Length: 282
Image (cartoon, rainbow, N blue to C red):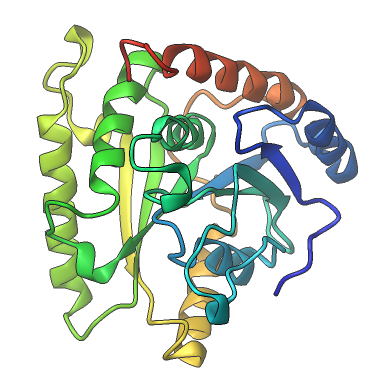
């Protein structure tokens, strides 16, 4: 099990409280404020126990806590954690989110899921969406309701900033990636088209808000070496990610690093107010 990195911080607790002191420590320890616009944020969302932390640790050499396969599938990440990615330029912040559709919060308590996913989309340049291969094309797929809600609320609260959605298909089967990608893009298109949109964005294509990328990985448990080789290849795409043509090359509305700390807190407070219990955005 991965040990906790000196820079790893629980940014937002499971109860929704923002860790101001912890974040200030992270900013000081990493010299984030000196980076100007030369930094990027990568977040990961997906079902509970789908290997999000494992993927982030292999991808970015972070030290997020991972699930112990021998103890069964239960909640490992609680709240939202951040860490500095090792050995990647530009300076890259990794954000590990609590898994969705977990039993620990109960079926009806999805407010934090929606808030944290919306937070990730609002501040990250790249959002990795972990999706089970067998979920593609399923109406009841684990991420489908969350994506629908987040797409809808994102347009109400924030202006377009061209976030890159990197869908990572986990435990790939023998089905060719081209076929899986085609089916997944059709799923995303249907979700987007079904979402009610504000008047000023009626008819807006998904591409106005998001870039969509798709890749697939073998099973970590069954084909560990193959998984590691594929992740090492994927890692290369995060080098120079904010340059033109890079994974986050189209990003817009970037906050300078010196103002990132204040901006992140303001965004979380806005989301909690607008997306909390009794909100019209819920």
